[in-house]
Image: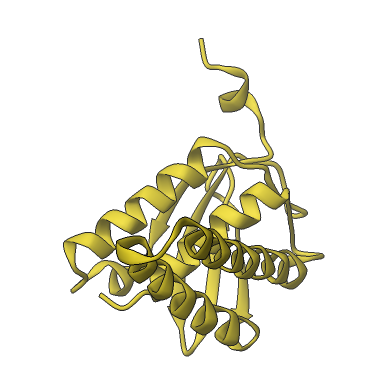
Amino acid sequence: MPGAAEQRTDRLARVTLEDSLVRNVSADAAHEREVAIYDLLSDNRFAIEAGPGPYHLHLAIVENRLVFELTGPDAGERVTFMLSMGPFRRILRDYFVVCESYYQAIRAAPPSRIEAIDMGRRSLHDEGSRVLQERLSGKASMDFRTARRLFTLICALHRRP
């Protein structure tokens, strides 16, 4: 018998990525993306106005736009949202710089420095999550934890291989 989470209709049940996003990436980048998808699917609250889920989300990047293609349980109706990457550009750039500083600090910095960098990293991640929620407002609703997990996946898609 399925658990309560599997019976909910306000969730993503499957996430796939456009072939161009999965080709020619390093094993580390592929693993990071798989973990991001696993975390997202393990616990999320996501709904669209077009109809009940659970949903299959197919993510792509087309002409510098993030494309959310969603299908419901009957796979009959397909809903597509396209978001410009412009509002995310600065956040992603800053996030990757802070992440690099964090990885370097782990090797030699005192714990107080590592904690400060980590707070900055989490703050940028939260900002990106809020921007994602705002950009999808009126199209899709999600809780903040789901927005964070989706933003993690977006970061994983933009990390250099």
